[in-house]
Image 1: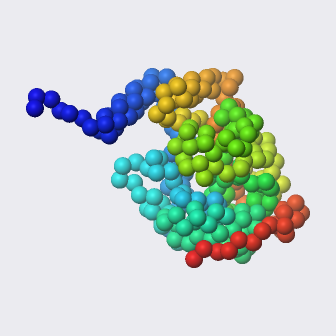
Image 2: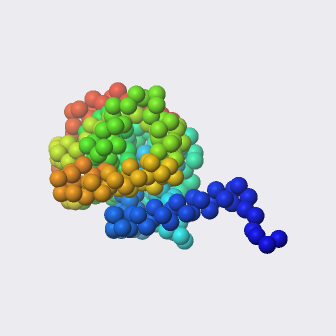
Image 3: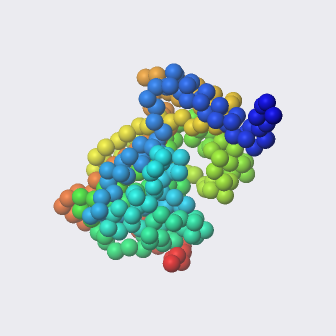
Length: 286
């Protein structure tokens, strides 16, 4: 036969690869140097998760690092098994059962952590704080469980990013379907969002009220690939516009490092403890 016959599946794969190549060319031309926030978060984890560290991940879900953020040859377990202690919590028990990268997993609320005082060196929250109705209660509990000089890493959306503002006004019924369409995540992974500590001033005010010092505050741009050409081009146009000085405050995400003082001080948030008393108990996962 003088030509190669391509089956429909092969044709779909080749079409997808062609789309990726075209998208990459466009991105390099219009948004040079752009890095996805999840890649930046992964780089920060690589720096923080050292062998002498005791680490807690809030809302660990199915995985800590997005699979597409890993380079060829990189393994998520190399990150999560590096600390001397790695613990993940989530209130979604099915997600915990699906997580195979964190050795110790506990079903619990962020607002009521089932751990003793000063037992972790690093606590992380990757796209989690926006799902809490009481972020101050979360920060108070993190402060309590962190050792002196410990760090709390918060990666969370900017409330004023266009996609966040759209999400805030959309009816709850259609959000899961849109999540699946736009992000290719399962609809069941779409959890309610409240955005109660999702501006720079709100995060700063809330964290300082809980005793933290803001060590580093990064505003991150984003560009998410979509096989739907209209959606991808819309994302690309938004990414280009937000690079203009006047719109930089509308960038997608915040990556914040909060530091507990090296010399411990007594702190208890009344709001946090009242929220804790009302928190529902969730069983642990073995």
